[in-house]
Length: 218
Image (cartoon, rainbow, N blue to C red; front, side, top):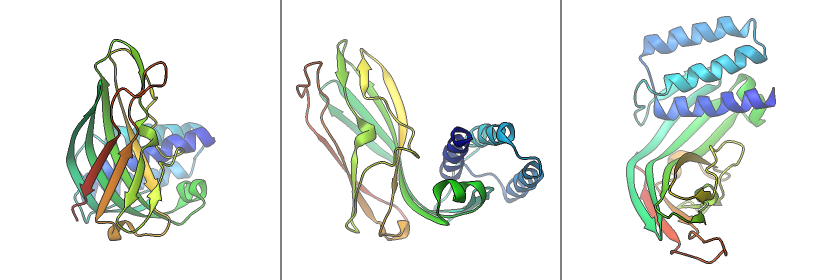
């Protein structure tokens, strides 16, 4: 059951931050969710998660827009797309999106997170290695520093982890979620991301650390 809740949680976040249908579609979805809740079980939870993932391809959410679903109400307070491409040794990393979100949770999601509210920053990452050799690079361990004075590590339960072992020329992608502890997402105007350099099979650096500065558009 915990696994299914985890899938549902991630799918909801992807839906909130990457997609938003029309008002009518949202109301229809809420109606369907209510009907499904009356016969909820592990199997239905998994189906809801898959549906949310499929919905994430429908469109883009605008800053200031609130998306409501069975997990609560989720307000996108900031969004910066196409942050840039960054290289270190054989590693090329694209940061396609950084978002700030303020959520009021309910239902299973609130129980799962043991919270009624959640403020967080999302970072979408794609990584490619150009080396034939086996190397290590850990974007899912990047540190985030906010202009509100917080230094955060990715939440491993929420995040879509990128495995740090690159066995030859491979591409990987994932999402880091940073839960704000002492700030509102709307208060964060600028973040800094720090990635440790890639290393070879002897754990020797084969590049430089990567530091990325991002202004969040509100």
